[in-house]
Image (cartoon, rainbow, N blue to C red):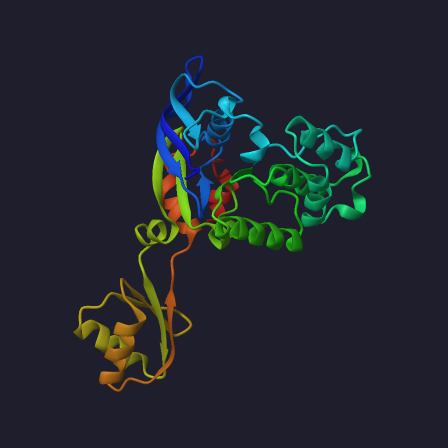
Length: 311
């Protein structure tokens, strides 16, 4: 099994501890979202996994080996950390040909990945003429070049248009379905919720969560049910009678806290209270993430006096 295993990983820069005793594993067959505020240590951790920096203590291995010990690493690990890395004077095809040659990857693979990421028609243009989204696609092509079982992507949606975002989302899911190990760092909560199966969350270099995404949300955001009826008085009385916490909004809709749709529906049906609307309001990843990391944000804006007056 080709997993990423981090054990007691610590990285210090002078007096600052960027990564603090991290221990977690990223396993094959699922997309693991790697989340945390700016300065949380995500990029540093990925660099440590890829041997681009040395840990102060602890280990980071891929398939039981340090990245530096892997022969022809592009055949085993693909990574996108910086879309600006390719030299601007090279064509996209020449950039990938150089990578392929350094790892004894057949040149035919270059054209295959350029086609896969949608850059075949501009493969002979210089990278310096590429937009950020095109550079992102080239970075993904480089990560896929060796057909690796392990893929690490840092903010892969940056610069992509809506079509590109859908494409990268489907690509990550497909890689996981093929049994690969996929670790994706992102600041986009709604986007992460659309592709991640599991979450690893950092705050100030420490591990805050390592859990399936749905469990992460359910543990931090209370379930609610939205209800609308033609008889608000009867519905309010029913909630009061059964000790159910509910709030009536200005639009006539009720929000029922700590409840499930099935329970409210059965209760209203038994009491013959007519319902026009009955829907679950599921918690979002963004709500759960902000609840967990509120005290872990290193850089946060302070509301201006004008904003406070308006509030």
